[in-house]
Length: 610
Image (cartoon, rainbow, N blue to C red; front, side, top):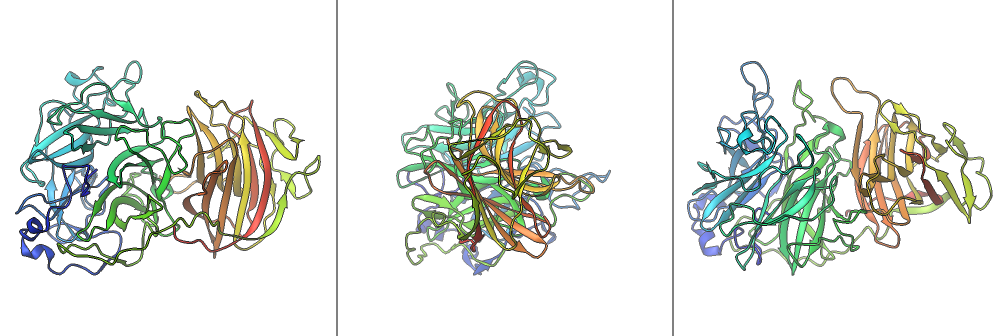
C-alpha cells in the first residue's frame, strides 16, 4: 500500500485541501491534460530514465515536501549507465519527484551505499515508501544478508526485509540497525524462502501489519511492534507458494483488497507478468476472488486486474495504487516493451514505468484499457477539484465474443471423426464414455527442445475465431505433484510455434497456464513464456479468442471454472502462419486422465474493453 487516501489506513494518502494548497504554488501549474505511456522520467541533463520496476509512490505529507515521490527497485537508469568496464551500473533504489504524477525528475539513490545488514553484492528491491508516526519510512528487500545475520553463513539466497527512516521522502535515509523480517528457512543448507516485497498497512486501532513474500514460500502477513520496526509473532499465510508476489493492499467500501502479481516478471518480450486481486473484510484474510476462491486453495484464486492486451506492452505488474485530487483511482506499475525488452548487450529485462486509471466494476478493480499505448486523460492534481460522477461499471466478460458456430465435436460416436489426426501416437489408447473423450496423460511434453507429447489436431477455418473446450483433469485435490501434468488446448503450427491454454498441476497448486513458444531466438531472448488465468474447477472451460492481423495473430485466453464467471486473461501476439491447427493436449506426466466434454469452434467477435 503506497499512496491511497483510505479510511482504514492512517499512514498515507491525500491531505486536506488546506494543506495541499500550502504546497509550493508551482506544484499545480501547467498540469498536462493528457499523457502517454511510458511516463517520462528524466535525469538533470534531460536524458531519459528507461526503467522503474516495482514502483512505490507517496504524496507529500507536509508543507515543503515534494508533491509526489517515486522510488523504484535497484536497476540501471538507462543504457548509458555503465561502469568503467562497460557493465551496467545498478542504482540502489532510484528516487524521483513529480508535480503532476506524469513527469518525474531523478533525485539520486535512496541508498548510495548498501545498508550494513546487506552484503556488498546484495540487491535492494521492491521499496515501500510510507509516512508513519510523523516520519517517512522506506521498507525494502535485501536479497542477501551478511553472514552475521544469516542462519546459514556463506549463502547468497538468505533474503530479508530492512527499513530506513528520514524526515523527507527523498532522504537522506538512515537504515535501522535491526532487520524487520530476517531470513526464513525453507529447508537445510542454503534453502530459504523468498522474503521479498514489503507492504505496510497501519490500522486505525494502532496495529501495523507487514505483507511480504513471493513465489518461494507464498504471500504472508505478520504483525509488527508498536513502532513498526520489527515483526512480532508468527506470519500468517495468505497464498500458496509458486503463484504471487508484489503485495499491495488498499481499503474500499468495507473490504481490504490484496493486489498481487504472478509469473515471471523478467522474461524479455515473452514476459507474462500480470496483476490479480482478492478481497477480505479482515486485513488478515483470507482473500477471495469474485467467485469465492481463496489465494490459499490448491486451485488458487485470483481475479485479473491488469493483463497485456496485444499492443506494445507485455508483463504489466507489481503495481502501486493511488488516488488523485479528484478522488479517481490510478495504478502505477512496470511493463516491458516488446520491441525493446532488454538492456543492450544483456539478457536482463528493461521495465519502464506506466500509469493507467483503475476502474471499479461490480465492486472489483480492473484496468479496463491497459496497459495503455494511446493518449490518456491525465490525473487531476489541483486540490479540491471534482469530476463528473461516473456511472457504475458492469462486467463485460459475461458476454463472450463468439459468433455463429462453425463446427463442433460432442463425441457422440465410439471413435474420432476424420477431422482429427495425431501428430505423435498417444502413450495409451483414448476411449469414449458417456459422450466424453478420455485422454490418458502422456509422459511427454512440449517445451523448448522437449517435443515428445502427442497432439490431437484438427484443421481450423480462416478468419477470427473463438475456440472452446471443457476439460476435467483427474488429479488429487491436495498434495504436491512433481510433474507438470496438464490438459487443454493449443493453437498449434508446429512443435516450436504454438500458444496453449491448459489446466496444470504446479507442485501443490492447480492453475490454468496460458503459454507461448517460438523457435530459438538469436542472442539471449527466451523461447517460452507464460501467464496464468482463472482457477480451474472440476470442469474447466478453456477458450482462445483468435484475432488475425496480417502475419500475426492476437490470441486472448478465457477460462471458466465449473459454473463460475468467465475470466479473461492476457493476450499473446504470435506468428503462426495462415492456418494453424487446433490441438488437444494431455501431457506432462503419465498416470492420469483428462476428460474432454466437447470442442466447439465459433466465428470470433471483436473484444470489448474489460
